[in-house]
Image 1 (cartoon, rainbow, N blue to C red):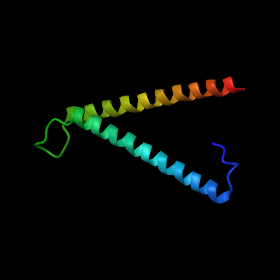
Image 2: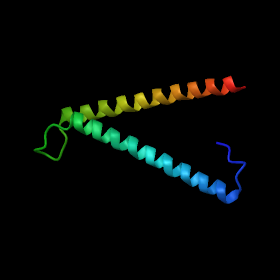
Image 3: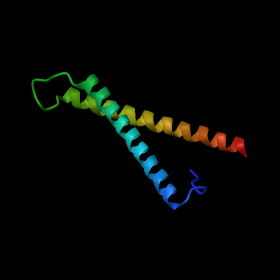
Image 4: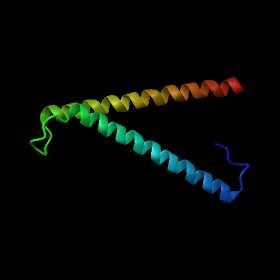
Amino acid sequence: MDFSQFNGPEQAHMTKVIEKKQMQDFMRLYSGLVERCFTACAQDFTSKALTTNETACVQNCTDKFLKHSERVGARFAEHNAEQMQGKQ
């Protein structure tokens, strides 16, 4: 983002606001991943250790989530690049 129209303190404030928003988005994403994988994978509550099946499930769940996020990010970048080219 271009903050050149703002003075120094305003730029610092905008940077802090954006960083806070990014952290909130990351925490929401992380919490969603934890909830989704826990709900899908946690089956046996008789032990505090994960079973072999639960461990494999959590690994698959997180792998799929990360691959999905990576793909969505790539598509977003492509779309954004197309939008920027259209403006020129």
